[in-house]
Length: 332
Image 1 (cartoon, rainbow, N blue to C red):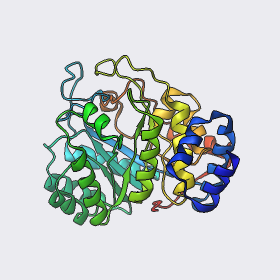
Image 2 (cartoon, one colour; image 1 turned 135 degrees about the horizontal axis):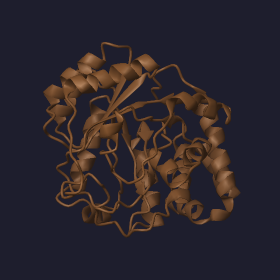
Image 3 (spheres, rainbow, N blue to C red; image 1 turned 90 degrees about the vertical axis):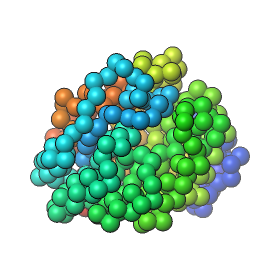
């Protein structure tokens, strides 16, 4: 097993059977995590890139089985932030020292490409990068947003198992998801994707396919984390036991894609008090503190118990693991 890890470190390539072996064997977890951390240090350094996350709408047209803001959930107070409010939150974050603003929302078509374009242009008057995470749109809409100055786009595939994707995403289309990712890449976005780990029906085989998809697609950033069941979703009775497997997928992804950006996601810390630090010590190099105001942040409940990040304590916490906060925008 150690020879497989060594191969991944040196060649940044593994076959599907080799990835499966690493995912299945928990006796080598520590070696795997330490190796991913060394590759992270070698290729992207010790700086941690902070992205200021603004969740500007929890109104969704989709019904993904795992998501608390799904359209059919009637037990949630819905909201939309005005353009002025979004811009104000972004400017406040930039004054604090952030170099990237992440505009994230449920799939809410109220915000047209033209409306979002105006918001992006206003934010880009400052020296900042802008990441979008707003779901599936047309090529023309993505182009309008890119022309307005958007730099990055995160669109998680969630699973590359087509049958599982179909089960979890009613009235959605796997091929269209792929089309969106290809469009984003073609338009010159730094393109991110990722997967959810611990889904009912998910197999080690399909997780290996996910990792190989990330590499074949040559994604610029990968966001992944464990399923945390929400009581108002069809997966409410699922077992939240995907933490260590998520960490392994993260580590293998880092070994195979040494120079990409990988966030230590909030879900990691929500399920394990030390989850974010463990992720940062297993290949991650990005943290996304939520700068949405508390009233709206609590209503963007994709999963329950979301942990917040105290910006003022981050530097001290990172120093404990010999890491520093980056002062640049953190492009791949």
